[in-house]
Amino acid sequence: MRIRLAFADQDFTATLEDNPSARDLLSMLPLDLTIDDYSTNEKIAYLPRKLTEEGSRPFGNEAPGDLCYYAPWENLALFHGSYRWSRGLIRLGRLDAGPALLLVRGEYPLRVEILS
Image (cartoon, rainbow, N blue to C red; front, top):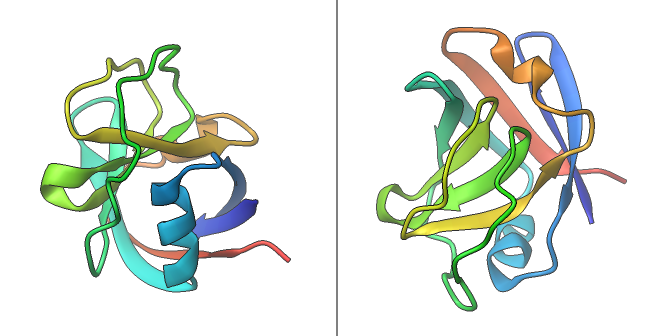
């Protein structure tokens, strides 16, 4: 399944993993959130409710362009720089065009919807 994300005149797609957390995110769409910079390697957006953590487990091959859910803070994490898996991080999918569009700094409205 693919989703569309849009903020700051940036429009991009992501392909979701086949896992319970990604399916739970799909059940919430469409969403209007706020996206902002966090640290030097990611943008985050807080969800209106928790996603299921069923089936979460450590994963490897972390890479810029990953779309994850960080369960302790109930937020989406969109990585534009290197990172390492940590407890509570669940990969939801990957950005189809890579992380370059995430380099726009600042806080913006974010629209997330199912790509039809």
